[in-house]
Image 1 (tube, rainbow, N blue to C red):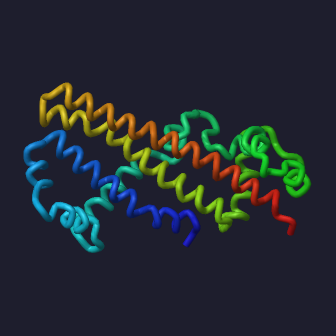
Image 2: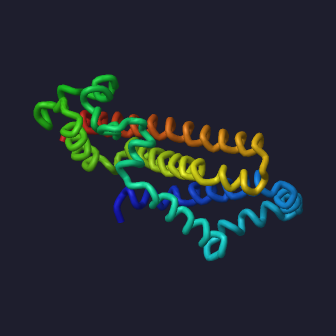
Length: 218
């Protein structure tokens, strides 16, 4: 199993919990009295835990929803929507021209000695960075940043897709423009915050990988 697959598996519970929260919030917005009545029962927390228990029907539905939502957007477009850059959106395309030179832990001369002249072209930077990253995927700093990046990226995309889909259903169910607008605003804000978090963790991943490579004396 690849490192990325393992990290995504570790993040699976968090993504599922986010989907469950989205379902509860949408239920509150669209069907407030019913949802409040359900949340008022003494065993509400136990029911929430049961929904995420392995083998439960609720978990199967949540996992299916995750697969569908994250499969709706091609990887290239996903990267553009998360990093807010149309060309060369991933931070690895600026690994040497911006992030490496701005991190005091990174010895750029050492990297150039090991890998040859460092490129300026974004595409070539991305390819060289991926080569470096692939050699240090087990570094603690790289693993930690990558895990956080994948979680923020996936949750951000889910928030954006639900922002595009759910407010219309909320309006149809309630005919309440104020509540629907507030709900749409909350979904948009949640996407923006997670996208910013993903961008920060993406840069940290690049910096940690370059720092690990420049500190390696083997």
